[in-house]
Length: 373
Image (tube, rainbow, N blue to C red; front, top):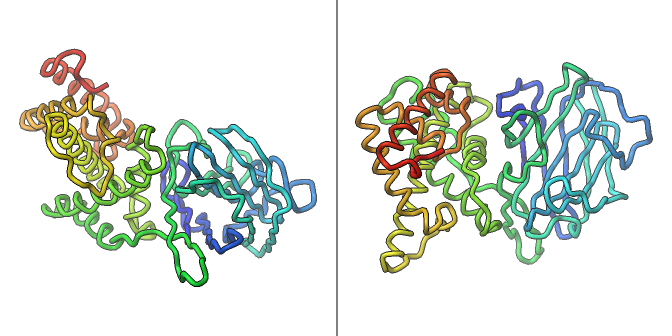
């Protein structure tokens, strides 16, 4: 499985010179991690190569592997042969250290590479997701880069809701070797459609929605398989889908804007589709087999509320399409004010005003206790 870290921690595209690559290979006994990253010749730890507590304060590439019950493993590798391997049970709740790993690193002008070998038995149980990060630079030039962005006020690499799926696929039954792979996605098609949206092509938006819908649905399914009692973080789904579906080597700032807008519509469709199914079951309908376990997105008690909101939004869209779109972005997709502004092509101040107006209209339409907050 090949991973490419191409954005800053908050999702802003990074210059190509700052991209870092990881390659993961899982065999019957070990996980093999290979790193290729820019080398900035930052100060190195003042200790011999090997396990190095506090390596995150230096130039480093990190890999987080997420398992069931909020267990996860943090692996770090630096250009001078230092590493960290830590086991967590819950966010930042460190419970164990893994020593005596085999690592090797080499440096050249402008780049470094390294290899780390982790015993397969050390992987977290129920492994389902991963994220990767790179840190380099000193003082004001310190840079934080992420495979899957971790939105917020500052970098937080221990976010349990920001990850991309790990999928186990048996290859060669006689060898019993498991490998990690991603489901192929129409990356080129999505990137071209995003460009067409930006150029004003009328049908491009509607062509994009079902593609994004299916990928968001698949990602949500993977999440719910592992966290059946947990809340579905729609913001994390949207960011992950962007990284999976859009060709990052060709992506432009405007592409992300349009993708956020499309994702808000797709996320609304997913939640409303689930609500209709839940409402039908509550009225005595027969449950139909579904490939996506949608029941975790909206609980039975919320189903009628979501359907009522959906109808109200249709009425709002007839009066003021922009206000309805803000609700899609903020409420259904969980986008921040800044991300909503990007999706809408407006300012944050405008989004704040529109969100306030939309909620006021919905309160009047649905009642004080029935408007999104």
